[in-house]
Length: 323
Image (cartoon, rainbow, N blue to C red):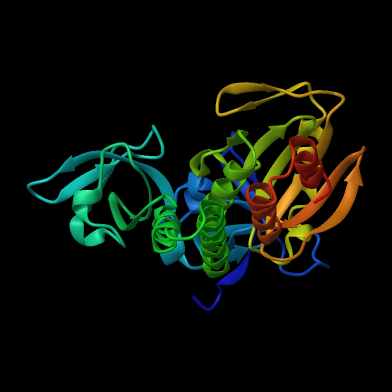
């Protein structure tokens, strides 16, 4: 253990099932190369560029690689089967090459009762071999329930005021939840929920298929955006090569996302968003493609403007372009 070092995943090659971990010293010549067989307690599909890992360096090779805090490794899938008598169930495997689905028992549930579960539900959980622990349903029901209660409590007021207050309650809850997130996988899922409130044509990539890829793509009118989520403060260093790859993809006439071909327009406003919990700013420009850091709270502000200020469509799109 004394030889363990800590750094971040810099690049992943999904075809060859290998990758690079960022060098420990900027003056060093090479990053650390690794192959799939050196992963401990994690599958290749669970890796994500920018995630912190610990490993044993062996020259320019990385051995015995673990996520720095494996207890925080969270993946997503769907409930496949429930046994109401035994109070157990199965969650679908995330890799078709895996032999088994994930088994869980009632005691592994967080913030939900077994009776509330349904087959087909989207859930997040911590894998432990073939077992699923700390299972959460992926939804935004708490905020909606709170908003519904706000409408009920203010039923004697004018309808327009009740709706406005309900929306403000939802927005407040969304902001508070965003502040509490410290897990990069949960942050990505939460960002997808936020973006779905803003745009209808969105193509998120499932976490198990993301190695070496961006997190998603969305289009609205003549705006086309590739987005990538991170909680890291030094993302500009390890995402430099990634960002250039994203720009090259946006310059194509189409992109294939989750097996679906998405057409891209030569005349659209193309942008790359690195979504963080930091600040919103322009990073640089690559062949007329604007690269920005976008704080998730800026996106939440746009939700508020959309529903409370009742912006017309063109002004709303312009806001997203110039965020």
